[in-house]
Amino acid sequence: MGTAAVFTIGLLLAGTAAMTRAQVQPPQAPPVRRGNRQPMPPGPNPDAQYRLGPDSLPQEGVPKGEIRGPYTLHSSSGAYPGTQHTYWVYVPAQYDHAVPTALMVFQDGHAFKAENGDVRAQNVMDNLIYRREIPVMIGVFINPGRTPEQPEPTASEWGDRTTNRPTEYNSLDDRYARVITEELMPVLYKEYNISRDPEQHGIGGSSSGAIAAFTVAWERPNQFRKVLSNVGSFVNIRGGHVYADRVRSSPKKPIRVFLCDGRNDNRGFGNGVYDEKWDWFLQNVRMMKALTEKGYDVNYSWGVSGHGQKFGGAILPEMMRWLWRDGPVSTDPNDMVERALRQPAGKKE
Image 1: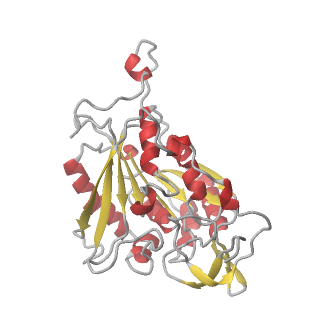
Image 2 (image 1 turned 180 degrees about the horizontal axis):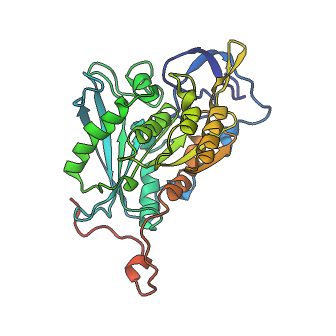
Image 3 (image 1 turned 180 degrees about the vertical axis):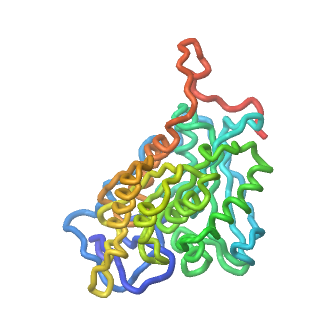
């Protein structure tokens, strides 16, 4: 493959959307279509424009949270019998077991927490929590379900060919929502003092993980009300292109959504034919318009990136600030606790 960035598109591989650009470093989203080349604009690789900023990198003096795990979550709800989910838990240095805390759940957890990856969400949470720009929160990085004999997803294979990811993440039903709310949440409530307020629960992901996050909040707004979507696969993998129309035709739900995508995401060319139902960027714009017209609390950012996490990783701090912007604030000028950087809790559980 030459230095020019190209997408390979062609045969549908159920449940994924990904980028195969020569200059993009792993972890990257897994491919959906392969075989034909997608038209690309002339010039440099657009993804090279996106780099992680200081909010996404470890900073001197900032207390570091702890990533615990991996843990195994065995199927108990009946949603996907015989499967198990690997997950890790980020516990910030400021976590106090005596105080109910917020929660953020990331799908494709291995990619969001990768120390040298395109997102490094744990660093973002360390920095923003320290500066009081988001609440103190527990983070969960959960991988797609798999049977015991199937391999764990990796940076190069996110699980679409080897795990239950295509079914779990792209199906427009409540089964994956049951995994999160009926299998994962009870374990978290038992181990950590997590707020029961759904306004304090966020969920996010990239590609198929993003539509999965939206589906969890859509199906269970009584438990999750903040959604972070990077290059969301609101396309016809398993009918996801209907979401914009479903948003318009359904009663408004109390959820907040931040969408981001790039103009060079997969654009729906396959076998020499354009199909708008497979145009990631178009369908993300349609989602934005539907949510806006319906009166949702929605924000969005459109870049020139391809299908991956370069752009989403670069703006993750801003996405998190916006989603969590309404945390309690003291305006008392004499409140030196509120005005100080958050220090580690006196005792961590």
